[in-house]
Length: 136
Image (tube, rainbow, N blue to C red; front, side):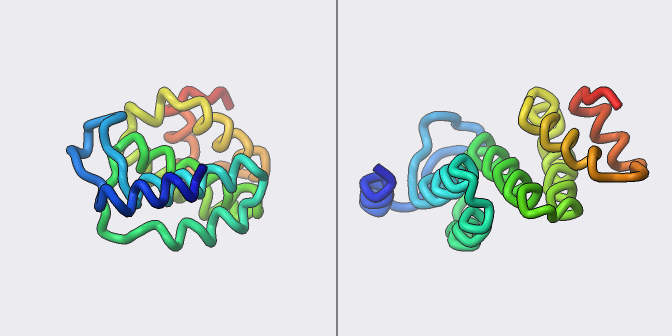
């Protein structure tokens, strides 16, 4: 199915539509990000990070696709025990899309797992935990 999606995306051309136009934008960037998501779901974080490097630069997906993609990248880093990278991505999303992130259970789960591997928490970790409503 992903090969068919790639072919369709190539035929459609670059992702079109506004940054906030959910469910109406489709193109190569969206398909590339969904391939990363599939690798994360399949438990292949190394493949996910390799595929993430192939997401076409300069193409602007919708904000929900972009933010979900970033959560997938954080999850991949977490699975590989790259805790600082995983947190850095979550922190970046909170700066760009704090209200959206606060509603994401995946963000709470990821941050909880990151915090479980820390002896002490930074101020940024505490702030992010508050923002995503994670009980410490």
